[in-house]
Image (cartoon, rainbow, N blue to C red; front, side):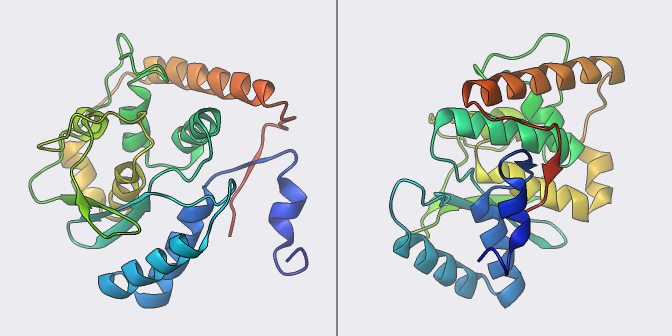
Length: 225
């Protein structure tokens, strides 16, 4: 494995990955079958999730498909704990997700309280379909209340996951990267100086969690591939 995939082994002790493991697996499966072959994608992801077990299985519980002109897949955070999830959500906001998704997620602090003087939440148009489903069963799931607050998704459940944890964030980020015309219609403008301050707060929180984990970060990232 080290010979075939040297980068992660060379990077993991000092650098942060920009993506979670199952996010990489998801892209591989979508690339293998094509985004329109939904049945085969679900079958393969289910098979992978079912054979993985143990503490460090790194599987996502949920997959989301966002559609407008194209079809875009996203996975929920495949992390083993609260701290790890907060680290990867912060990393995703800082350097992975589309800026509009980052703005929406950063509107709320890790304690789920809304920030003052900064609101990047959006209201998706009816032309954008966003549907999450359980990875193992394929059962469709309503958006949680957090995603309702972030993206204006209708009929959210009472369940409230950490902001940015759900598959909707990655899925919508890919859609907005791919279809720029939608960005102009749904993304609110934010104060640039205030956003800079929020980014500093998110990075400070990230560094705090890394120190708690005794991770010696060199302030750089790598893209798992």
